Length: 65
Image (tube, rainbow, N blue to C red):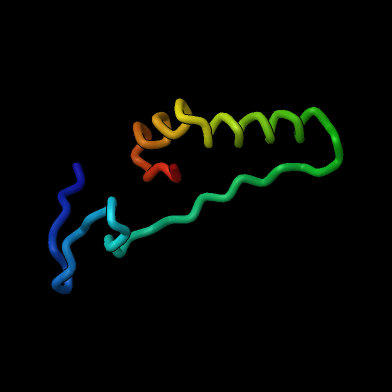
């Protein structure tokens, strides 16, 4: 269990972007027209959909939309 505490006079609010702990997540897609590229594009589109953003949030990440 993660307990959020105030640190350096900053309250840890993920919603307003002031929480000082972040992590970038990159998704790489092939450009050569292979089935891997098609699957990669479908995956990104799913992640950016309303349903995908709910899954992102459920997994503990902050949704982009």
